[in-house]
Amino acid sequence: MDQKSKAEIISKRLNELYPKPKIPLSHTNEFTLLIAVLLSAQCTDKKVNEITPDLFRKADNPELMIDLGKENILNIIRPIGLSKTKASHIYRLSLMLRDYFNSNVPEDLEALKTLPGVGHKTASVVMAQAFGIPSFPVDTHIHRLSQRWGLSSGKNVKQTEKDLKRIFKKSEWNRLHLQMIYYGREYCTARGCKGIYCDLCKELYPERTQPIITQKP
Image 1 (cartoon, helix red, strand yellow):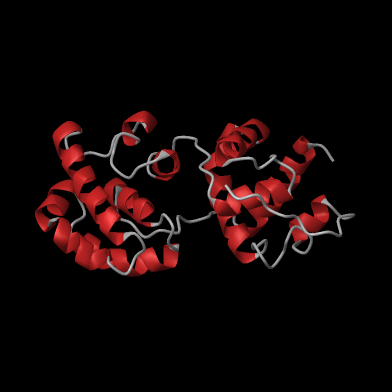
Image 2: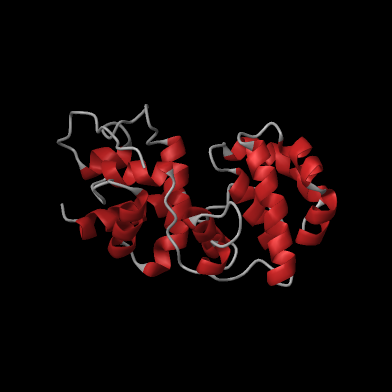
């Protein structure tokens, strides 16, 4: 089965399962989404969503976050992994937004990547989900599924993103980004499916009997 045929099957099945996928991170505006995505690095969305309501009640824009201060930010997000580093990033990021972007989250990928703690994936998520600009950020779930479904060699997330953008229509990128995350969590998990058990893996590769060893991003 060629990649075009696979893409059609995947898109159809994911649309049936998740016709209107919601952003899994709780937020109220572009700034709080940016902070939530930053906090989600090496941490579950569930844990982030437990912490951020208190943080965002006190500071849902750069000025209030600056007023809150680095130590208070740290005290709130302490249960999250790498909390000290993330607190510093959030504080410094807020300063930059105030001083260089008129306290607005920039609607530009390269500008976002100049902010402390904001790498390519975080910036791409914000571009896609805050501004609706077509992006295909690759997390561990998407990286894993792309290998299992024969969409990418899986050498690194950069190559996986490039391959997915080539295979799928640009109009599908933002939706598929969320759909694949949800599917990877619910059906094609790292240990549960292994590339041979979930419905999509079986449909794409009915002859497969051996587990797929996923390369790390």
